[in-house]
Length: 422
Image (spheres, rainbow, N blue to C red):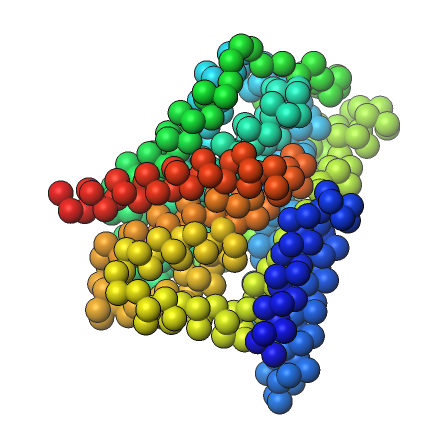
């Protein structure tokens, strides 16, 4: 059973990677891989009821992620339909490619700890499409957005799901993780920026279609923009105060945006009112990317439920004595498989009795699993989301961005180890 699931996962992984070669959208092989892995698991299991319960449990977790993604994408789309991003993009007058790259990456890096890496990536790619017209030029910017979003999320307790897991599990404290991981995270972004900057010269091709041509006033555009960004920022606050999962915060935020958008469009002509409506925004979000995300999550959950990931973690623990090397490898593995089950396995392997709160192991684990996902485009939630939004080819990213992200990842890791030694 284990061998067959690994074979199915590998074939599906390559089908996603070779999307443009086989001319089949990555969503199809992702969904097929997820369902087939669970089918093999079900047929090989004696206790069918247990497998069903596990699937329902995992699907409950997935639905939270998927509804969060759908809600965030819809909010961003509502802002876009009301020309909210036009208010921001018209202020970004920089046309020099290198300077613009640093500005976009910097905003992403410092926005990610507040929103989270997934939401930040969605917002920044949506804005980028309004700033840079040339799709080929835009791809490098998108690659840096993924790197910066993941690095920015790593040093915040609410910026990345794995850091949040450690925070809620009592392995780290909020103040300490910010203090310890800020410098390594900065280095993991600055080093790739220095490399990518050398590829650019001259001015960027500014997008001509920066406005949707609506009759909204500047005040109405600002209301939508400020409301949208505010409800996104307040999702972590909602989670902390109510103890409800983040998708509940994003759903109530979407409801607030819906009411405000309907009120703003109430005095418009019927055709324009429809094009400004949240119902129209829901039609425009990338549903295929959401289903692709579901397929990936199903596949990884099957690997976790069958014990494949846990066995991998135990094998590393038995074969490698150095904890730093183990954590580095786990970070790189998070670019292939989801970092959530890897983090869950690590939390089970290393008890708090041996590695107390704010131990260097937990801090390094937060950094590696947070930033390691940037090495491949499907290695993080942010990467998966923008892969569909910006039409990023798996092999283009692997050829052009992966090695740069890896250098940044290792540079930040070395800085962390040196700081700990000193």
